[in-house]
Amino acid sequence: MWSLLAGTLLGVAIGSVSGLVPGVHANTMASVLLGAEAILASAFGPEALGAALFGALVTHTFLDIIPSTFLGIPDADTALAVLPAHALCLEGRGEEAVRISALGSAMAVVVSLPLTLAFLLLLPPLQPFLDLWIGVLILAVAGLLVIDAESPPLALAVFAASGILGLFTLAHSYLAWHGLGSSAVLMPLLSGLFGIPTLLLAGRGGAPSQQFTGLAIGKKGIALQSLLGSAAGAVVGWLPGLSTATANAVLASAIRYEGDRRGYLLAASASNTANAFLGLAALYALSRTRNGVMAALALTELPPFTSLLLAGCLAACAAYLITIRLGASAARFSVLRSAHVQAGVIAFVTLLSLLLCGPFGLLVLALSTALGVVPHLLNVPRLFCMGAVMVPVMLLSLGVVGF
Image 1 (cartoon, rainbow, N blue to C red):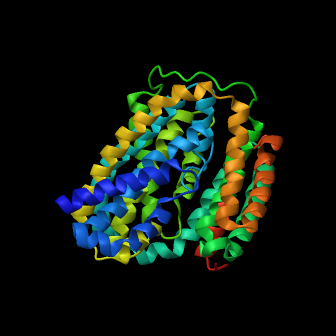
Image 2: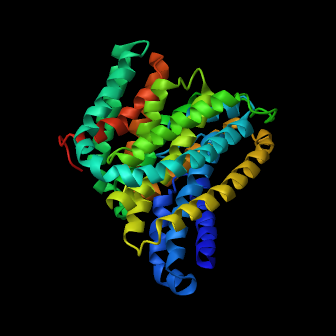
């Protein structure tokens, strides 16, 4: 038990760092933990490493909303969530956005616990039939999104252009520095499509005063969006090749993030956290890894499934409290000049792209930023820029391309 608690505390600390520092994902921190495997195992026991890895992933899914809300910088899991969250921040409701996201993640933990047990029973017999239909599923979702758009031809053009950019970026990810590959190039790709355009198109006045007057979302809405988000995260955790970003794009077809920003934000956060728990179930049921943390876990001596579930729940409780506490500090952002903050964030993202990916990262950032401004000019929802993720995954699942 002490080994589990020590590992969970370490995971919460590491997940807090990865969640709060833009561009640093829990997958990156997992490699650091693997490097210290011998030390952790000898000091705390074999369960500590597994608890630390899973605890870091769960914590990250709570705290990654902070840079998305206040800085407008997305990562692979918050690419679409940054739009309603940052919009609420610009209205002076940044703390509300953070609290809604934390509530969605917490609700997902509750919903995911019984689902993980069902996954352990259902995944093995059903998986062979589902492997063949992943690409078809994504194609169907993309088609529905385009047809349902206000201007289908323009939506299709943005979706196709972002898909081509995503294919180009992933096909040449070997050009990224340090051998980080596709996990690194997603940072400039998604920051250019969703983060920097938001900052460039924002107003240049002072940042609005941040005030919290309660959650403007009803209990029925909380329950419904939590279930929708958890279901989307469960599907992503189940089907290989899909990412949380894909799940959030699917959610956008059911919940209009421009019309119901709070509902979408809650559902997207629930999807993000549910994906972590259901990805763990897929690892134990099928020995398949759905993300970098699960791949790292597969290289270790796996502790009992219930031990990691307990570690994840403990990490979620701690992460919820940390997220709420940091969200309560939102009023401090009102003293900053918006133009100065925007310039600083853009400079930081540019530097981070260079450090992670080298000159290729700067090229991807420039191309994706140019494309990310197009939806605003054409009056098309930026949702369709998710073609950068959906098109490569669809073609990879259908066997058309290989990275």
